Length: 342
Ligand code: PMP
Image 1 (cartoon, protein in one colour):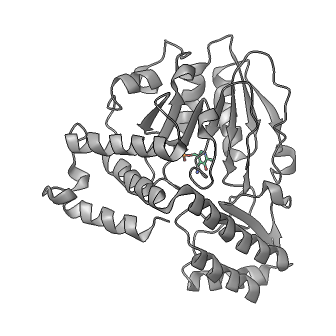
Image 2 (cartoon, rainbow, N blue to C red):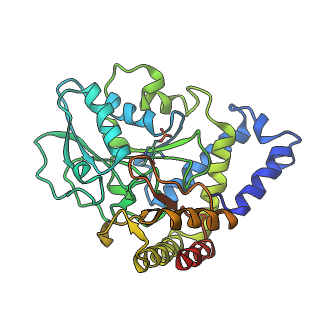
Image 3 (spheres, rainbow, N blue to C red):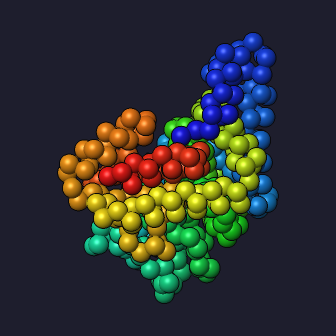
């Protein structure tokens, strides 16, 4: 979901962007107006993450998967070693990309054997000379989330696609973090990448420019044509996020998740995928139902309230309710009433 204010503002700009007489969909990517949009996006990310000029921010295409490839391409030479935490589908895919590109990379910890119904341990004895450790802060498909990240003594690369700005984190301790826009940052087609300059200083030199962070930065994020209108939606989302405040957003997300998990736990027809409460995601609540008739009734009642798109991933089955930042407590209450009726 996107907040109504964002949809309203964007719709105005489709007809006439800031009274310029042209649409945001027509805005040239080299125009001053677009430079201003990107600069404000970057400034807002730095402000919200409380990171300074020791970080660079990029607005990229190719989604999460492009980052799965770009991270090892940029940081791993043939003799380097990276470690991956396998906490879910996307974490495993990120690891698979890296292992395809680098023979020394391995998965250090995984809960694949129990269908990712818990988080893997991250209190690890890390291999020597790890170039970076990759983890996924929130596991969209299985509904687990790392609420805290220990102080690893190596650079941490984090995929924050499905929980960026949902909770307060110490962003300054990451070497690189990335997030696709289509959850808490806007619409598909834009990926935010924030990278520490000192980590980037170790970048490999022989990379095709389109896949090199340094080349994108040197080109002022204009190496290839950025997703102009998508980045504008992201700007509107970032302004909205700042206006709400991260503390208020986190409080709201905790309240929404508690309402939903409590309702599911109280009704034996519903079976939560993640039993360990400390591992539960605030963003994606995954569950199955133990009664086919009740399942059909549940889907029907949800549809009547315009609660749609809640089917779970094929590897988990059942349902996945996403509580991204724009979902309100009232939306969740509507769903809870349905759960209580089943
Ligand atoms: N990482 C996470 C945590 C995701 O949830 C997703 C997809 N929703 C991806 C990566 C992949 O993103 P994309 O489809 O943009 O490649």
